[in-house]
Image 1 (tube, helix red, strand yellow):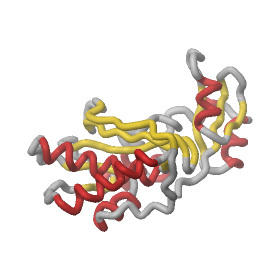
Image 2 (cartoon, rainbow, N blue to C red):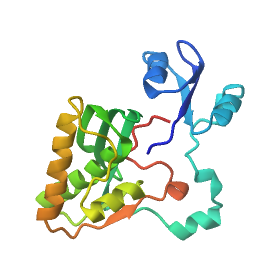
Image 3 (cartoon, helix red, strand yellow):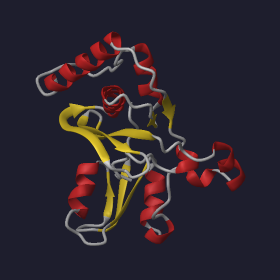
Length: 210
C-alpha cells in the first residue's frame, strides 16, 4: 500500500499543505517558478512550509542519508538499461506508469492515466511492459525499478493486489490479466534490478511528484 503523502506548496496560487497530488497540482499549474515538494510525514511538511524552500529543493529522498564513502559502495547505475516507475494520485486513484532510457530519460512507453489503480499495480505493469518491450527488440538491457513489491509480484507471476475489480477499473484489470498471462507464457533473460534511491536519487522514470 502506498504511503500517504503531504504536498507543500511554497509558491503557487494558494500556498499551503495539501493531502493529494491533484490538489497540489491545481495550485501550481500555470504558475511560473512554482515551488513545491512532497513529504511522508505531516510534521515534516509543516516544518518545511514554515521554513525556506531553498533548504529543500533538489534534495532526493534518502540521498542525504549516505556519506560519500557509502555511496561509492554502490558504484554508478548501469546505463545500458531502462527504468520504470508509476504514480498514483490516491490509493486507489488515477494511476499511470512509464518506462524511460536510464541515461537520457527519453520516454520509451507510457500508459494511463487509469481511473482507479494503485502505485503497486502500476509498478508491476511497468516491469512487465518493460520485459515485453525489451524481448520484442531482442535487447540485453536490464530493467531498474524502485519497487521491491513489484519485483516480488513479477517473480511470482501474479499481481497480488487487494484492489477489487469494478466498472471503473475494468480495463486496468484486463491489462493485469494480460500481464500475468505474458509472464506465464514467455521466457526472458532480462535482469530486474532494484534502483538504489539512497545512492543515486530518484529513479529516472519518476513522475516528479515530489
